[in-house]
Length: 357
Image (cartoon, rainbow, N blue to C red):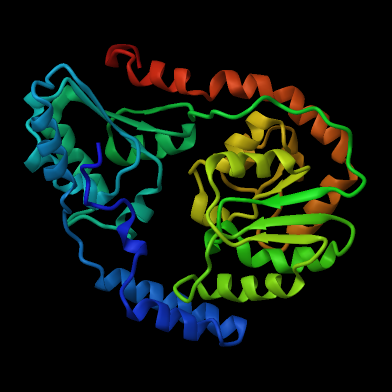
């Protein structure tokens, strides 16, 4: 039912001036460009309106159109501060049986992107008072649940990731390893680290890099890296500069011998990574940064986690030197990961009575 006009993460949309400023910054030397981009982001956050959006009213209207919903369980799996800020004013607790909010981002990120009129902790505490025991809070990693629980002084329960992927493929080791970056070009995903890695492993590996569309509104470091990668595209480097459908995206992950996740651990912290979760379920080893949830979740590849940002190439080379046994161990661990992270397991936790959580 397409009822929402309110966006999720609308703060990234920007106005007409945004691409002009970021596009100009991308033409500057890298160090100056990075400083200019940081200043522009800070300024944008200060100018961004902190308010409740139309999400609550649109949700209440949709429930009213459905008729009696007081026995229904409402799940909000991806919501911003602006989305949640108007929910208490719009939705009567008597209209539903329960409402589950799945927190997937860090508190400071929610307060910086699409902020509400007050900090997210205050918004969630208000919702707790409004809905009482009908409000259930979840987070999609154990450390993220602990962080939110401590901040809110409310129970926040970890939930599994609802991963659905094809069976694990068992294929012989490749003559030339295929390294894959998937999920789109963003600065927090370490896209700007890829050109140096591609140059260092020239002709020792084959790369497929999914950037999605990169325009003048993209982070300047991403624009600069993208131009560098475009100049190297050829037999050993393929770029996908468009959005991928789900099947095409999963085919790309499956085709990889080593997945590249050079994410900024400071930006990700306790957050999950859907790409890593899917790679684990498919038995594809992944290179991840130290000091965040991804290191703990990397399974057998944890031994090759790197120190961000400088240690990426060294870790990739070490992993390639042990690719055979690393791949075998990752495939062997995939069934256990799948048994924990799947839609059925998620639903079981969401619907479990609060007293047993």
